Image (cartoon, rainbow, N blue to C red; front, side, top):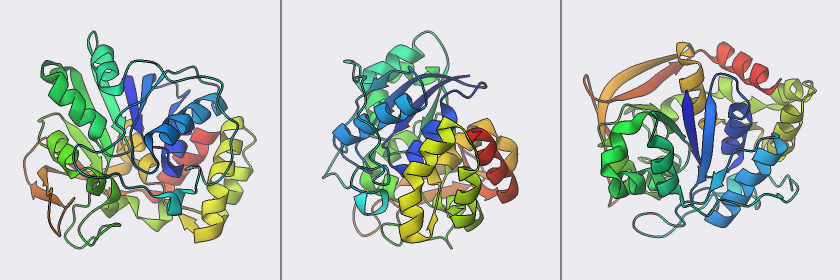
Length: 295
């Protein structure tokens, strides 16, 4: 499977990248970065740091430095000032490619069907769809982390909105309404504490003697120490592609509110549609896949 990773690293983005890079069941063609958890320059530097730590030569493309409308919003209070849990990984030797993200996506999809794992605001994907509308049919599926779909669930920015959708609701609405097949991991499932990293899981990770596991522990140790638990939101999007058997889902259509008090709210109409929203996860298998992926 040919895959593009669209990220805003971010601790959980970094964990997702470590699990994806070098995975033998997918062919990662490139990484695009977007403004979100951190600004675009730091997000791009962090993507380069992780590819270097993973021993990967995958190209990194700088993407959108701001949402389609409005101001940037960051989450360094959660992810640390460096975006990687204040782990201070070495400065990367490699540089990002000159090609910008939207064009890079178009070029990757030109001669092959492409799947996308998107774990930040959907600005790059929306810009690609607007700039290259004829290329949408070349996108096989998008696996994304974003939104909150169950009426009983609440957002993590406002009572209505999850961070990625709140950061760029116009982009989220554009992508969700595109007709492309989408698998969405929202807060309904990613907030399952059984899948989070706590002190016990961190100890298991430290017992894995690989470079990937060592880097993962450096990145997530401080957040776990500060918060006692860290949710791996973005890993769900990757695992929805790699391990669909561990999830249950519901089919729907989704629109995203772009203004007002409910900005970023996911409005789901269940029954038919192009979107599968993850509704349940086998937590034991999730943990098993996480540890195996790091080893």
